[in-house]
Length: 344
Image 1: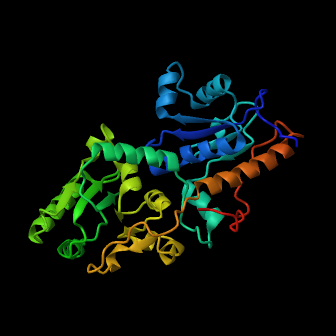
Image 2: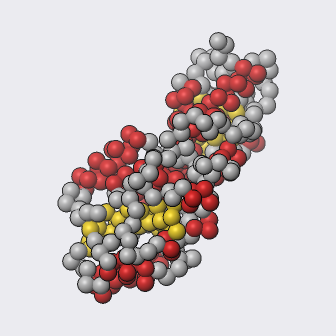
Image 3: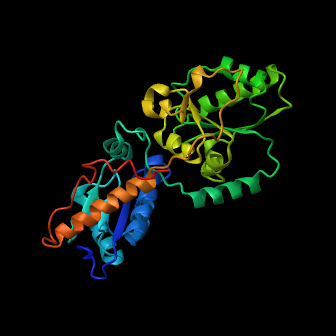
């Protein structure tokens, strides 16, 4: 079988995750990196992550992004496939051009593929079985005697946070928050609102008489940004998960373990995830009942999307053999993949 056109003489497929000036810790950037690595595995190629630090530290003699990209292509080989919502076609002027160029945001990409299917609302991410195992091992080493069960409360922006003190109060009163409650803020979490939230939670433990039964851990974002970030460890290890705020990435990553995640913003969640009970409306939870844990099939679409892109790449690379200097394919999401094949 003919492999089809490759941009480099050695025939190795090169996949670039172009993060640009975006925050490399943001969910979408992590997702692009994870997707690029999975595509590289499918194509037996190499993945290269290009972020702001690389561009600034490695190319101090020029401030022109297009020239920096040309230099990168000369050093590492021209990219066959570029993925990343920060990538602009006008910056990639090297020759030959990529075979596939995907400047699409991850939510839009997933929406094109899975709209109306059982996977609607799930986005690709960087977590794999292996790095979750490593994350849980590190988490357990750092917290060897953590009281169980472990309830993770992930926060994004809290400015729309609806006051659920009564619900948290009743959950605590019924003993459903006994063990450890571990807060995990994100870059979007407002420090003052986060401090208010965690202080209120400590008050709830006192007022319900459960203070000796509930251990509360609430690191600041600054501390996890410059020290240990428990996020991956909590995704791997938590018995229960709650999301305050909106984040498709956090939702998609938490359900890789088959664990339901509760959210206080269900209006922003695809109906199919709610219908399948992967995502649950926290506001409607009966506080007399314990929170759901790991009771569903693990759901992970990153490999599924990577396989689809790799298939499209191989097909277009064969077509491009006749026109090596042709334009890159812009949208490899013309048709949804075969949803009958295994996806969990």
